[in-house]
Amino acid sequence: MLIDEIRKTEDFIALQREIDAFPKSLMLIGKDQLYLNEFAKAVALLIMDKGVDYDSENSKKVLAGTHPDLKVYPIKDKLLVADSEEIGEESFIKPIFADRKVFIINNIDNSMESAQNKLLKVLEEPSKNVYLILTCTNTNLVLPTIKSRCNKVELKRLNDDCIERMVDKVEDKALVIACSEGQIGRAQTLSKMKDFTLLCTDCLSIFTKMKNSKQVLEYSKKLLSYKNEGQLILELFTLIVEDLIKIKGGKEELVKLLPLKSELENVAGDYTIRALCEIAGLINNVNKEKQFNVNFTLALENLLLNILEVKYICR
Image 1: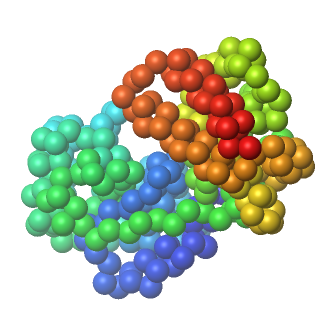
Image 2: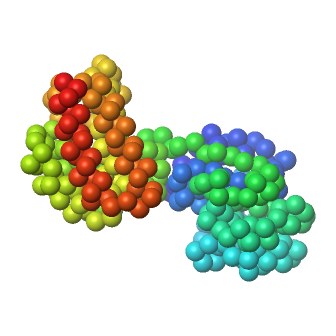
Image 3: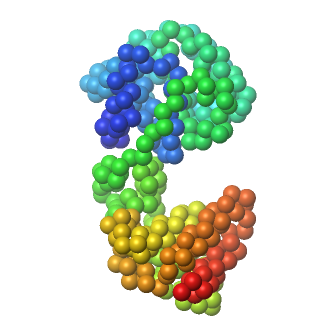
């Protein structure tokens, strides 16, 4: 149960210590939206119960999503002006079941500017016993006036032990853990991906088996057969290059892709540190281009050709 893991984190324990002087408006910031959503729910429990007691009626209702004093927004994909107006109206209604009322507003950074503006009055003058918890993955998309009215907490990434407990029954969980980067939402997505292990192997083959330009189209076609996984492919390339650099630097104990470690060690001698650093830069450039909707097929083919070129030039 994710909430059990959340209760053990430093971030949650720190908030628990401040329960008697809890901020009326709190912004939780992180990369993992699933984790943010669940953390917000745990904080709501903390506010309502001054703790997390699963046997209390407050806890049971919050965990079941039926608590009348916990309101979660947005109703649809993003916060709308109508949602903000409703939050304002609801904030004046006294709690029904608990002593406090909590509003969770997820993905505030994905909301319309007009909806954020409409929310300002509630943040500026919150009603008695009303608390607001906002979650956010990109603070650059949040109005400065919203940010200035919230206490901000940047959530630390979950450790690998926690991720392992959450994906315990997954095949090749070591690869899932390595690629999740402390994000439980990402770990769950990867664990449900049918061909994830095969994709990892195919990405590694670019560095271990691709020997000449004639093979570029073959390998490019193989990678592109994983539909809509361009970003994941680039992230796997990055992890592979970083691990090769660690091996070249004599830091094998820091390798992340442990199931692939022996293959990485076998091929590390084919690359110089200079080549790997240049390849890392090439991958980063494609990442930047991808943000501007470039043709990923062409970008990937060019990247594979450039990897070959750098590999041989920097020998």
